[in-house]
Length: 147
View 1 (cartoon, rainbow, N blue to C red):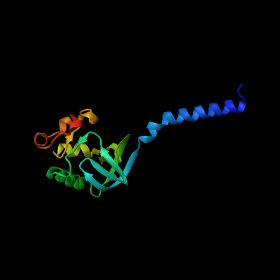
View 2: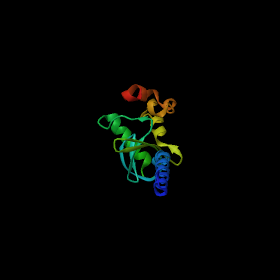
View 3: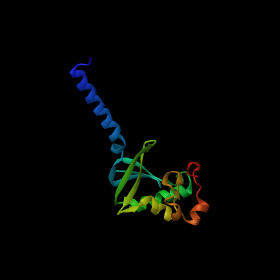
View 4: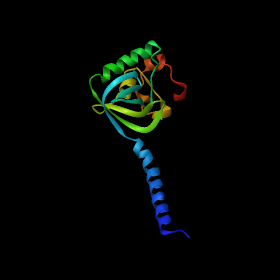
């Protein structure tokens, strides 16, 4: 037979575990806001010290001329502005995954619409596909994991 203390501890432990299980994903979803301190490439920025991988954006690598142009575009887009990123709780390498905005406009969508990146349907669900330019489709390689 369990003593009252053991029963209380069991109930308390169950409550803590349930609380952690329910709040875990919610805790991971958050908003990061601030200035971009680093633009790694067109689909990765560091906002207020937090690296953010733009969800659903397939950008060229900076080892290519197209990648360096795309990075330069993103630097010019975010320079001096406050960026707000809604993180979805996922991580890839050292980065949180999210959608970032300047004045309510999705910066990933802006990069794609300007021909500097493509839609990564695997992660975007195809929400950016209509923004791809014909020139970008013909000139930028689509990452294998985005097909």
